[in-house]
Length: 451
Image (cartoon, rainbow, N blue to C red; front, top):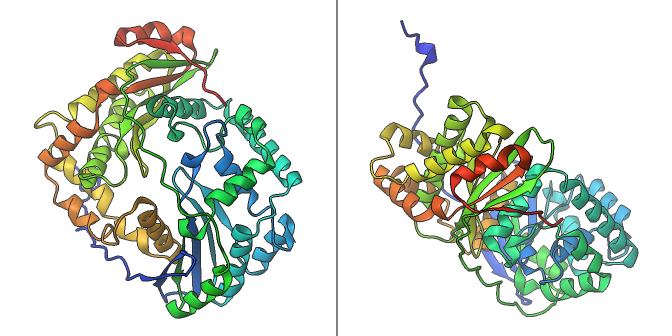
């Protein structure tokens, strides 16, 4: 006798999304201004997004973009690092500074009445950073220590190895922190030169969302940032060349009881036809807890606590990868299972309706919750700017996913998931797994990711 309490509940209908209207302006110096009024609570989130990131690192100076960003709040204008932190604290705010592959962002959430004070602080940090030698040396040493720590983590080694294999010498192929050797070559003058060349109003956008009046924001931004000048916008970094590298890269960690595994290959950029089908096939094969790869490795085989896959979309290209950590003596079996699942999903008739419905639901049922707060709206608007997407992008997501057929998803899998082209990275005890990995019939190469 089957009890109803063990039946999976049917998902409700998808909630459509309508992204709020955005008020657009541009200052005379080229700074883009975007305002999204939202009066639910008396707060405002501000983000200054600069369209430059780690992909702009010079060839011999990996980590420069991230280090330069880290230096911005180490002293600006008349304030040193402690005074900058205290100034934000007095306003009940905290600066969130992030340097990604394609953009650098400085975000702050505060009470709406503190708008002008926060804008003045952010303007000081971006327009008038001190970039002093002692601060540079301290930040560089902290980042070098962090690299030493990361070098001991199997997951960090696996991530570095797969990115380097897929993107080769392109700037997407190195970590944001760079390497110890690259950091040692850097000087404070390198950071100053990078800031001077890359931080300019023509490369930037100020986004504000919350309980604010667009006209007031425009006046305040003009007052705080109108004096900003800088180099003319530069072309973005060229797209990497798609490569096929079906090797097994083995990073030896003697004595490790588990193996960290990555299986990945070159992927599409964020602006790609078929985006809805791509994210749906990923949800089905490895993007959710009930996906095929996790069920096979965790539920059926019991060799891992979890496995997942994802498309890492960037401006010029992307990376598709599956990641997991498995028993060392079952590594080859796990890799074989992952490759089999990636191959099977593209087969005609492979996707069943109920499985497709679950994958769609995982993407659409909670999608509307991504646009509830001012900070979420700012984050979404920043993504539109970074990837050159129109403001109807989010409105189209739910109907775009809901309209997909099994044939659409299978076609996306055939085009964008290519297990035969994938690089396999294994970080673990080579003495326990190398011999079994040979049954996969792929060249095996011992590597040591640079940190």
